[in-house]
Length: 117
Image (cartoon, rainbow, N blue to C red; front, side):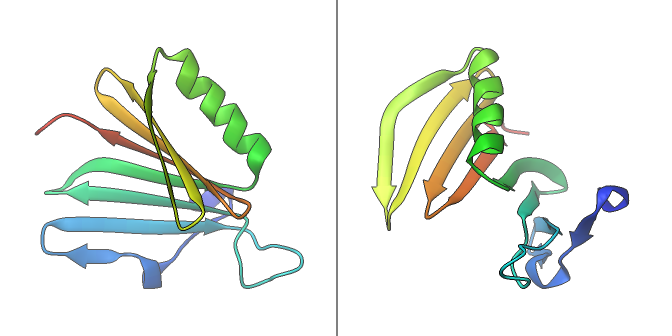
């Protein structure tokens, strides 16, 4: 990832008990240099990666990934939640759970395994 312009964010990465997380940012917004274009976070429990978060650069990229999630045979759950002006939708496939979140121009996709290791 670092060879493609992603930067490790140590202030948003770390270890807490048996949980590890590593956060990366990509680029900077033209108008707000302190904000990244995209974010990616990897979570691991007991040394096994079990969650990935990707905050896309925009709605177009979000929709492209969402279309791919739908193509793999996921089932959209009827449960949606709106909290703090965030809309979350859930999709389930064999072995994985996807959560999509849209709020204030930010679009995030989380994928996690539903298997116990």
